[in-house]
Image 1 (cartoon, helix red, strand yellow):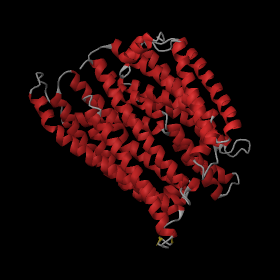
Image 2 (cartoon, one colour; image 1 turned 45 degrees about the vertical axis):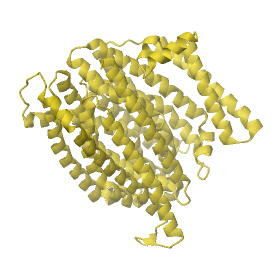
Image 3 (spheres, one colour; image 1 turned 90 degrees about the vertical axis):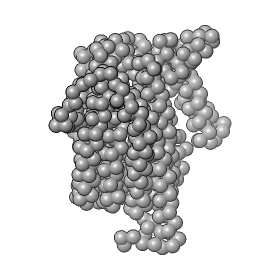
Image 4 (cartoon, one colour; image 1 turned 135 degrees about the horizontal axis):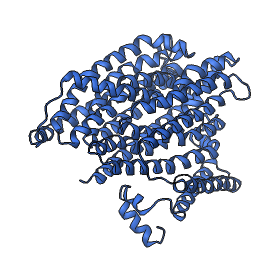
Length: 548
């Protein structure tokens, strides 16, 4: 398989898996939010525990796949498969140990952390999540190894299984707790099993079971591939001296720490919000119950809807790390540049319409998805504008990590985080902003991070980008899309009197207008289409229709 085909195949596999993952994640968050007794308060407790979990997850595991994938892809690029497998074995021992430590820390610190962030009812949620850190550590090593070998099926399959189990068990436990508590009167820890606190704990139990299912799948996948992997190792023509274990551990830690830091900071808006929103709202006179509801809207609706369209972009960001690292290992700068340039263009074409579309239709989308908890459209409208900058930060991080500049995305996001922290403290207590201050500061955070990362990337490698194709034409297309969405929704609402139907029609027609504008403006060239999965067939059809 050619390098281009390998890259495209990896993108396609991750693209499909991420789409399934986001659909499942979206479904279970919508379902549990609409369950009687959960709502915005339940989302507040669930999200508080989950954000703390993500911090430890990033420290102990998130840097592993990217770091290991980079080292393994470099070995594989020169035919040293034995050295690549040695990297995997050392990483497995090292990071499963760190995963155990992460689980112990989360369990022991659950109570003080929940009190510190101003949401003490979330303590039980973090207890339930603690074992997940260990199981994700195991899964991350397998994912990094196979990702470095350009086999994205391990990562895709494990993540889909993880999310499928999480979706099933999360919804199941929340419903079960509600029924047992309300109808059977079962109590737990002095409160009804149907209390919001206990239902949130049931929801997070689904996450823990999902990570266990993912780790089991990867162990099975490795055992199924083990024979062919060792056959490849025995037949390798390249004879290389094995790296000492100590040197491998040093390289893994040296790479994974800045990548892990970057991963933490990539979700820094949520982390800063976790540490400040509840406390700052209560300091300004908002009651604890009101603060929980507002934080639940920000995280349970804003975060869910913002993260959903990012699934498509994650495919390119994930595939970029080994693709760029492998190209640079054999000094193929042209291929690295082309892949980065193409991924950045696709990121803009995905992120820009997602930002504007969600922003202009935020209120009707909220009413359509959350009929039993439909507050917060104004907050989602602001939060949506951060999508384009988060997407660009993801892609730029993948490109920079592939180029070996692993510290740059972390530094860029630390600067953005510092600005967000200052803005949260200033804006949230101000009655003119309140909870909206958190959404505004997130936009500024990722804008700053994107600018710093882009400057560093342009200094490192020359890209095939132009102002017209990357900014001007997409901006024209998305403006037409946004105007169409508003016009269609208002027109349909007048005649149909159904928020859901009007919203779906507005989204569908606006998306069609956006696609036609991209084609008429010739934003994507024939070479661009060839970089997409099945791009040759798509471009041939468009050429016959005189659209390309």
